[in-house]
Amino acid sequence: MELTQVAHAIWQLAFPVGHVYFVRLPDGYGLIDTAMPGSAPAILDALTQLGGHSQDLRQIVLTHSHIDHMGSAADLVAATGARVLAGAVDAPYIRGTAPEPQPVCTASERVLHEQIVAGFSEAYVRPLHHVPVDVELHDADTIDDWGEPVRILHVPGHTPGSIALHLPSSGVLFPGDIVATVEGRAILGPFNVNREQAIASFRRLASLEVEALCVPHGEPVFRGASEMLRAATPENDWV
Image (cartoon, rainbow, N blue to C red; front, side, top):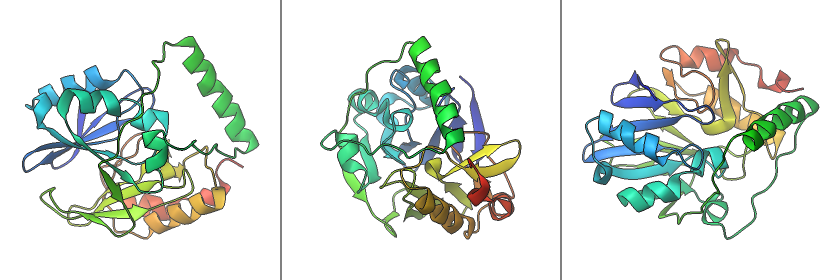
């Protein structure tokens, strides 16, 4: 696994499904999402490449409850003692105390979903372990121990409690699965529980001033992310 520096103090660790991002904090590192179950060894190895140790992973922020985002959170917490932060509405799904809502797929999304599920069945996918959520995040909350303010946005639609993280000072956005990239374009992420909400959330993110876009699926955008987001037509995606 290779680390790619996206912005100052931010690195992407790419996975076949669900990329993760490291953020250097004043007292260690934060992690945005955790990829599929079984990904913890690769994530900890990447932390070592950055010069950190397991105890230096302070925070894990989960953008939402899907398996390719929270899949290795429990293993990482056990190995590092990191705190888990997540959107308040998705917290019961992450803890395993409530059933996760299923997406309502368009015809083109169903085809893609079948391909992905077939790929899972052909590969060894470890079982998902739920994890406690230490901090429940709400819209307009801030994370204040990152060295710069981090604004939380509740962006429902992909899941009921999806969140995005906006770093206004450095112009970085972690959109979760509301936004993906393909062939140099920003598109609406597929497999949403509420398509109309997801489109509205996409438009909200497109109104921000953003230079770098740290997407979980597709290639990260290093500059000019606002222009890419505003040029997108999410209403036309996956129809």
